[in-house]
Image (tube, rainbow, N blue to C red; front, side, top):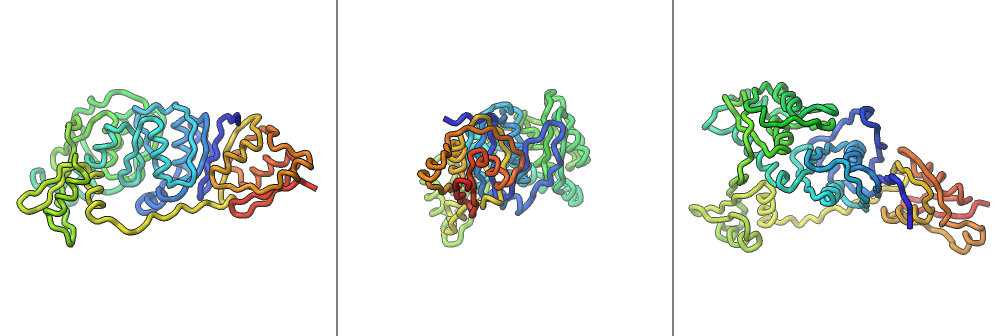
Length: 381
């Protein structure tokens, strides 16, 4: 059995930034828009052990330049073994969330990891608050609407309180807050929300206290209010070649728990944003197959790891799970007196594949040759 202490083989197509000490974390230029979505689809592979959830998410966020917000109700100090092999970053983050009884929601430009009860309504609340800026019942001027839907970056430091963060968002958007006392005192780890509107930034903070907000005074202020028991949006899908009755029948059969009905000859669906997307996919399925993740060549990967007295063979097995192939003649190694079960101590930060394998195999008197994801091992002459 391999004994690995604090092992991080965070292997990805774009390289890795090693864990930073608190207070020394470098600024990250996070991706937004289409680049953010593309990055979520890119392949990643890695093995982690004895690493706190907070540090794991920070490392992934930094190396992939994708903003990740961990809900205050999820214990950030949880340590768990984790292995991701050639999966999309989005799927990998979902697997991490599931291991801590959480789920993932992805509004524009931010990955939110939180309890299921918070994840379910988040995007719908954002859509509702955004749509209210167009409501005739509470007129908002075109200029004010443009200000509130402008995308900005919100950043806070370690030990900032949620009240301070809310006030920062309010100041950036020239908003007055009513009932701010409904947000209790707390201390949060530093984070960044890149490219967010006022509704997105406010919702991502308030959701962690089961709160949302109502616009006041034509978009000049907000009132903090509890999230209602039912959070849905109503849409009336129209799909070319399908009648309303056909759509209602199909959705009711495939999604029986969803409120899908006919109203005056139109097909009406009431549900969360995610449920609405599921309906559209059901009614108009795409024939495009998802792209197969590309396995990154070894020389495009970076390695940050720390282990003691780990058998070399065990380390090789961990690497094989991320699609690395080792080729060697077992008889030749045995004849040369090379034992792959020999243990090694190794600490590296952001090392290249050549540096990594040099440190790993030199103590065993092994030479190596790298070809894409294949490593050929031979006894040194």
